[in-house]
Image (cartoon, rainbow, N blue to C red; front, side, top):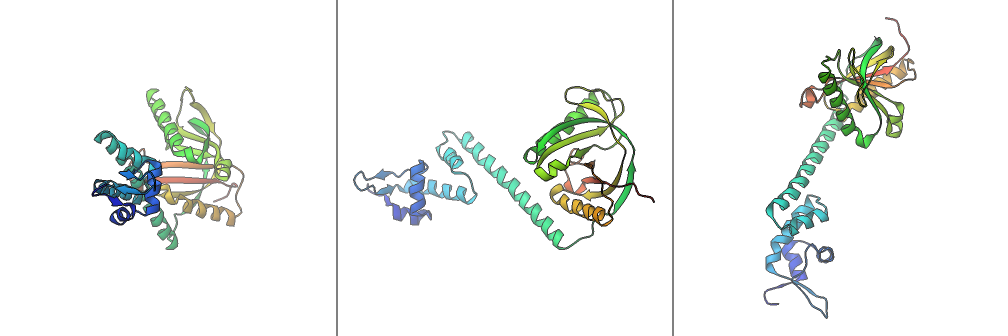
Length: 270
């Protein structure tokens, strides 16, 4: 085939190894322009160099091969753009998560001061709730869906919340990464509808810390609270409560979020 490139020359031209080119051929991702029937030698057309370069860039972005194949074989620009945009959005989210984890690690190594811990007597609280058994992988979707449903239902019933929303988190959820969660909104006179129930959370004594900002490093506040409870020998059996004083439903600025973490304790004086 005049003007074609051997697989070795094509590898040099594209910086894709011969092994990788053979693999892409087997997948149907980058099929040689010609394959000798007797020898099996592969030859590539110069016009395939840009395609190989695109594939290489996508692999550097960790795009799965099936998605690269969808891009390369797409019949129209809109379908191709949709696959590319979806992958880039995922990569951006991953980058944001990595940056947040790095920032959290640096802050942890710097050993910053943690928020003050206070003891508080919580009286019985009338709430509207949604309860479910949830796995950690499904937590965000379930949690924000439940909280949005609670707020919307109370608004439809023309009932104003009497305090910030919160959650009661079972020990199993922490220990097994799957367990019962109850999301609640304090409210008087909420009427049960669908999966929403009205109940009274019991009175409880709590050790409380307020975690500032994103939940990426909320384990630091949990750790500080657990240390305080253990050192003072005041822990009792019971679920953790969280209170969302300021959350993503109030502002998209994670730096402004404030999450109250409350650990059940023995009644203390003073």
